[in-house]
Length: 258
Image (cartoon, rainbow, N blue to C red; front, top):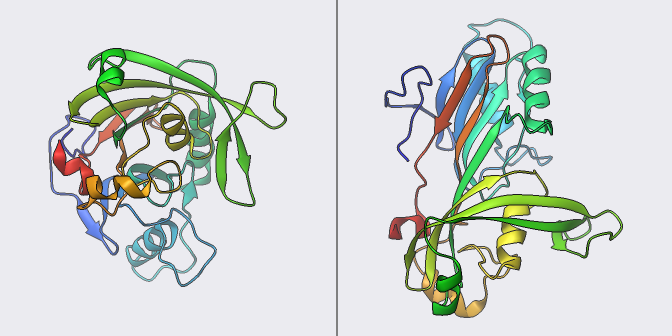
């Protein structure tokens, strides 16, 4: 999973680095693709907090060479604040509408695809016999969001406000009770990956909100970040229709063990 910023020929190059360690992977007149580091929110109501939106708008403003007016930046999808990985933003309203359509598409055509990797706890000897490296399995749960606590929970099918949540999971590598897993997100629910993996007995390293207990802190002594990375994003260019794919290598924390 090497870091790539040129979708035409996938040649590696050194990405531009902005304030907050945000890296620009690709940019043209319609879109800007970047790597979001862990800990930086996509958007924040607190003006004192530097978020992706404000940092990128300042970057675009500085490129305008004195032209007046605030540059347009459309948010078409998000990553949780502790999650690192690839994000695409729109630079025009038309591009934003098309990218939003792809991100929310439920036709099964795969107009936009998101892949994640994570390091998880909980793989006992018995679990390893059931979860063999290389085999994909699909997790299907029903999640309900609690706006008061900003958490989501697995609930029975038919529960009021519950939404079907699906992902595909593949175990790539196992080291003792930790595993590196590859995830294809099939629906986009609030904290979906974190909740579903925890519900399956595999909480993500560093996730104190969903199942990482006090006794597991020793196993992540070198990790203060959530070990979840949106490492690959593909979509159709909103103007040309050309397929574009960007991937990054997960950094820091428990990922250093794999």
